[in-house]
Image (tube, rainbow, N blue to C red; front, side):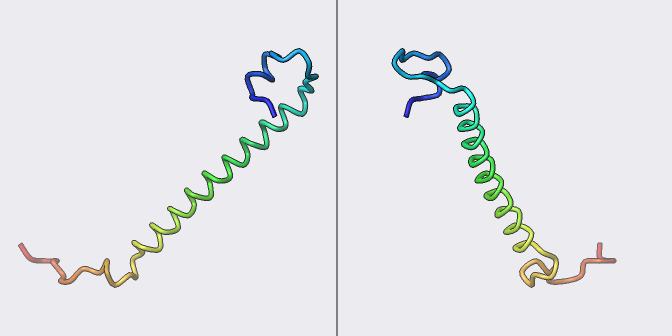
Amino acid sequence: MFSILQAAFAQEAGKVIINRVEVWGLFYKGMVIAFTIGAIVMGVIAYVVFRFRESNPKNASRTSMEGRH
């Protein structure tokens, strides 16, 4: 398997490069990376929403400060 730069500049004369295959390969690599990053971000968002939800007892105020100065 040769690198992206070798495929782009065709540095090895002995190999025939099919551009469609290389482009789709890069597309699939990019999609895997994007899906992984998206899954991590969604997991972090779900954790934050679950952890800091309003009904969580840890987030309830201990005393009501309304009307006190």
